[in-house]
Length: 358
Image (cartoon, rainbow, N blue to C red; front, side, top):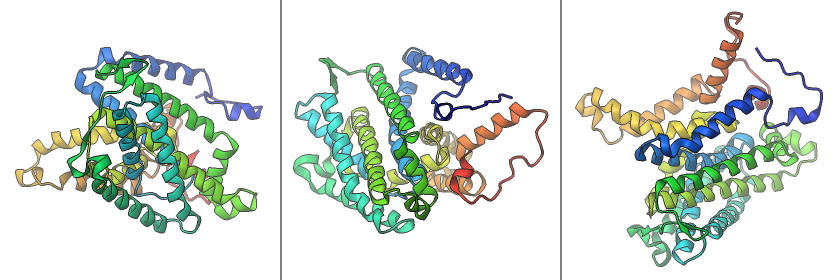
């Protein structure tokens, strides 16, 4: 088992804790760079969706996992970013400029939606964000002169520095670069005073306020940054599916995003990627499992929603730390083997949420 003796504050906030992490992250980076030559066209497309959902999940994780603000309408920010990107690229704007505008407009909308969080919290904030999601979906459907309404609109292929990214291989590297930048930005934010203020608000608003943290400013900032990341993911999503319609950003999409961060592991950046992999792989697993079920069950239209609901309830009840929490337990078990204790992983009560994330 590896023991780390920290003697300075810089060691505690270092991104890479030891050489082993640097090695395995480096190996993962090499595999991701070689993915276009290792995977088929279909699997590469699925990996692109994993990267896109990971970017959106980073935003929702920042809001729900690290700031403790409940949101059931996050698909609205995804839709704002996607339609902004589609409209601006269609008007001839450069890809990077359109991407920045999609993030900024989503952040501005996030600030407006963040205002109710100053007065309500918990399930009431969730209801407010849910209502906002319905408003955005209806607005996208009614604003036919810009969005095309329910008929939808086609999205032009992105052009970067004069090169048209018409293939999955080219667009994959763009998504990979954006995901890496967003991940590093998220990690640096969390180890900054602002990020630590977010975690303090999540643990106890009263304690955070007594320590001098400005609750209104921090909550609004969290909503803005979360919406901006969702807008960036929406812009990439628009180019990947190449066609947009309002029903793609409904309450079902919001529930999928919430399921992603809960199953991946709330309060963990790693959990975002575990959750994105789960969200993309789950429909494929359900499709395979239909062949083993009776025809009356396998062909029912609500099967996927039922499976998602059962999985969500199971994780909340039996594995609240998600897939990443389960991996931490397996890793600890292997490191301590054969000196582990029976009941080492028994769930214990804790007074603060941070105690459950160590």
